[in-house]
Length: 184
Image (cartoon, rainbow, N blue to C red; front, side, top):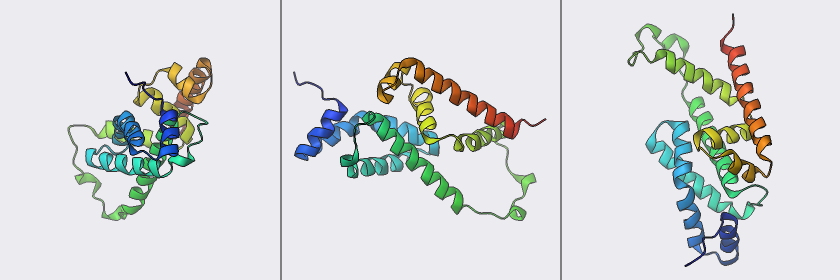
Protein backbone atom coordinates (compact mmCIF):
# COMPACT_ATOMS: atom_id res chain seq x y z
CA UNK A 1 0.00 0.00 0.00
CA UNK A 2 1.32 3.40 -1.00
CA UNK A 3 1.96 5.89 1.82
CA UNK A 4 -0.14 9.08 1.69
CA UNK A 5 2.17 12.06 1.41
CA UNK A 6 1.65 15.16 3.55
CA UNK A 7 1.04 18.45 1.74
CA UNK A 8 4.59 19.67 2.29
CA UNK A 9 5.99 16.38 0.94
CA UNK A 10 3.84 16.71 -2.18
CA UNK A 11 5.09 20.25 -2.72
CA UNK A 12 8.70 19.16 -2.28
CA UNK A 13 8.16 16.29 -4.68
CA UNK A 14 6.59 18.60 -7.25
CA UNK A 15 9.42 21.12 -6.95
CA UNK A 16 11.99 18.34 -7.47
CA UNK A 17 10.24 16.43 -10.25
CA UNK A 18 7.61 18.82 -11.72
CA UNK A 19 5.17 15.88 -11.74
CA UNK A 20 1.65 17.26 -12.20
CA UNK A 21 0.10 14.47 -10.13
CA UNK A 22 1.52 16.11 -6.98
CA UNK A 23 -0.46 19.29 -7.70
CA UNK A 24 -3.50 17.24 -8.69
CA UNK A 25 -3.45 15.54 -5.29
CA UNK A 26 -3.32 18.91 -3.52
CA UNK A 27 -6.15 20.16 -5.69
CA UNK A 28 -8.33 17.15 -4.87
CA UNK A 29 -7.61 17.56 -1.13
CA UNK A 30 -8.64 21.19 -0.95
CA UNK A 31 -10.94 22.04 -3.87
CA UNK A 32 -14.14 21.56 -1.87
CA UNK A 33 -12.95 23.65 1.07
CA UNK A 34 -11.73 26.46 -1.19
CA UNK A 35 -15.00 26.33 -3.12
CA UNK A 36 -16.95 26.52 0.15
CA UNK A 37 -14.92 29.51 1.24
CA UNK A 38 -15.53 31.23 -2.10
CA UNK A 39 -19.23 30.43 -1.92
CA UNK A 40 -19.37 32.06 1.53
CA UNK A 41 -17.97 35.25 0.03
CA UNK A 42 -19.85 35.31 -3.26
CA UNK A 43 -23.12 33.54 -2.43
CA UNK A 44 -23.06 32.58 -6.12
CA UNK A 45 -22.13 29.00 -7.09
CA UNK A 46 -20.91 29.97 -10.58
CA UNK A 47 -18.68 32.78 -9.28
CA UNK A 48 -17.45 30.54 -6.47
CA UNK A 49 -16.41 27.91 -9.00
CA UNK A 50 -14.62 30.50 -11.15
CA UNK A 51 -12.86 31.94 -8.10
CA UNK A 52 -11.82 28.45 -6.99
CA UNK A 53 -10.18 27.73 -10.34
CA UNK A 54 -8.47 31.14 -10.37
CA UNK A 55 -7.17 30.60 -6.83
CA UNK A 56 -5.69 27.20 -7.65
CA UNK A 57 -4.05 28.66 -10.76
CA UNK A 58 -2.46 31.36 -8.59
CA UNK A 59 -1.40 28.83 -5.98
CA UNK A 60 0.19 26.49 -8.50
CA UNK A 61 1.97 29.36 -10.24
CA UNK A 62 3.32 30.54 -6.87
CA UNK A 63 3.92 27.09 -5.36
CA UNK A 64 7.68 27.63 -5.33
CA UNK A 65 7.08 30.62 -3.02
CA UNK A 66 5.58 28.39 -0.32
CA UNK A 67 8.14 28.53 2.48
CA UNK A 68 6.57 26.14 4.96
CA UNK A 69 6.38 28.68 7.80
CA UNK A 70 2.75 27.64 8.18
CA UNK A 71 0.80 24.66 6.98
CA UNK A 72 0.03 24.55 3.27
CA UNK A 73 -3.70 24.69 4.06
CA UNK A 74 -3.19 27.95 6.00
CA UNK A 75 -1.23 29.44 3.10
CA UNK A 76 -3.86 28.28 0.61
CA UNK A 77 -6.76 29.68 2.65
CA UNK A 78 -4.92 32.97 3.11
CA UNK A 79 -4.56 33.26 -0.67
CA UNK A 80 -8.24 32.30 -1.04
CA UNK A 81 -9.40 34.92 1.44
CA UNK A 82 -7.26 37.65 -0.12
CA UNK A 83 -8.45 36.76 -3.61
CA UNK A 84 -12.13 36.83 -2.62
CA UNK A 85 -11.72 40.12 -0.74
CA UNK A 86 -9.92 41.68 -3.69
CA UNK A 87 -12.62 40.52 -6.12
CA UNK A 88 -15.29 41.83 -3.77
CA UNK A 89 -13.62 45.25 -3.55
CA UNK A 90 -13.37 45.45 -7.34
CA UNK A 91 -17.01 44.43 -7.75
CA UNK A 92 -18.14 46.98 -5.17
CA UNK A 93 -16.24 49.76 -6.97
CA UNK A 94 -17.84 48.86 -10.28
CA UNK A 95 -21.46 49.17 -9.10
CA UNK A 96 -22.05 52.89 -8.75
CA UNK A 97 -25.56 54.29 -8.57
CA UNK A 98 -26.39 57.85 -7.65
CA UNK A 99 -28.49 57.97 -4.49
CA UNK A 100 -31.16 60.09 -6.21
CA UNK A 101 -31.64 57.30 -8.78
CA UNK A 102 -32.68 54.74 -6.14
CA UNK A 103 -36.38 54.52 -5.35
CA UNK A 104 -36.16 53.23 -1.78
CA UNK A 105 -39.93 52.90 -1.41
CA UNK A 106 -40.13 50.41 -4.29
CA UNK A 107 -37.33 48.03 -3.40
CA UNK A 108 -38.92 44.57 -3.22
CA UNK A 109 -39.03 42.84 0.15
CA UNK A 110 -38.18 39.18 -0.27
CA UNK A 111 -40.34 37.48 2.35
CA UNK A 112 -39.50 39.85 5.21
CA UNK A 113 -35.77 39.35 4.92
CA UNK A 114 -34.94 43.07 5.07
CA UNK A 115 -33.87 42.88 8.71
CA UNK A 116 -31.70 39.83 8.15
CA UNK A 117 -30.24 41.37 5.01
CA UNK A 118 -29.47 44.59 6.89
CA UNK A 119 -27.77 42.69 9.70
CA UNK A 120 -25.71 40.67 7.22
CA UNK A 121 -24.69 43.87 5.45
CA UNK A 122 -23.73 45.42 8.76
CA UNK A 123 -21.70 42.33 9.70
CA UNK A 124 -19.93 42.48 6.33
CA UNK A 125 -18.90 46.07 7.11
CA UNK A 126 -17.58 45.04 10.51
CA UNK A 127 -15.78 41.97 9.14
CA UNK A 128 -13.91 44.08 6.57
CA UNK A 129 -12.21 45.80 9.50
CA UNK A 130 -10.88 42.53 10.90
CA UNK A 131 -7.28 41.79 9.97
CA UNK A 132 -6.73 39.07 7.33
CA UNK A 133 -4.96 36.79 9.82
CA UNK A 134 -7.88 37.02 12.25
CA UNK A 135 -10.34 36.47 9.40
CA UNK A 136 -8.39 33.38 8.36
CA UNK A 137 -8.57 32.08 11.92
CA UNK A 138 -12.35 32.63 12.05
CA UNK A 139 -12.68 31.00 8.63
CA UNK A 140 -10.79 27.90 9.72
CA UNK A 141 -12.83 27.48 12.92
CA UNK A 142 -16.35 28.54 11.98
CA UNK A 143 -16.62 28.07 8.22
CA UNK A 144 -14.26 25.17 7.56
CA UNK A 145 -15.05 23.57 10.97
CA UNK A 146 -11.42 22.77 11.67
CA UNK A 147 -10.72 21.62 15.22
CA UNK A 148 -8.81 23.98 17.54
CA UNK A 149 -6.06 21.37 17.93
CA UNK A 150 -5.56 21.23 14.15
CA UNK A 151 -5.53 25.04 13.93
CA UNK A 152 -2.91 25.12 16.68
CA UNK A 153 -0.79 22.66 14.70
CA UNK A 154 -1.18 24.69 11.50
CA UNK A 155 -0.23 27.95 13.21
CA UNK A 156 2.48 26.25 15.27
CA UNK A 157 1.07 27.62 18.53
CA UNK A 158 -0.50 25.94 21.53
CA UNK A 159 -4.15 25.02 21.90
CA UNK A 160 -4.92 27.72 24.49
CA UNK A 161 -3.38 30.43 22.28
CA UNK A 162 -5.82 29.52 19.50
CA UNK A 163 -8.75 29.65 21.92
CA UNK A 164 -7.60 33.04 23.22
CA UNK A 165 -7.19 34.46 19.71
CA UNK A 166 -10.65 33.22 18.75
CA UNK A 167 -12.13 34.73 21.92
CA UNK A 168 -10.43 38.09 21.36
CA UNK A 169 -11.48 38.15 17.71
CA UNK A 170 -15.10 37.39 18.61
CA UNK A 171 -14.99 40.15 21.22
CA UNK A 172 -13.46 42.51 18.66
CA UNK A 173 -16.25 41.73 16.17
CA UNK A 174 -18.99 42.19 18.79
CA UNK A 175 -17.46 45.43 20.06
CA UNK A 176 -17.05 46.84 16.54
CA UNK A 177 -20.62 45.88 15.65
CA UNK A 178 -22.04 47.47 18.78
CA UNK A 179 -20.04 50.67 18.36
CA UNK A 180 -21.01 51.07 14.72
CA UNK A 181 -24.61 49.87 14.64
CA UNK A 182 -26.03 49.74 18.17
CA UNK A 183 -25.78 53.41 19.08
CA UNK A 184 -28.16 54.57 21.79
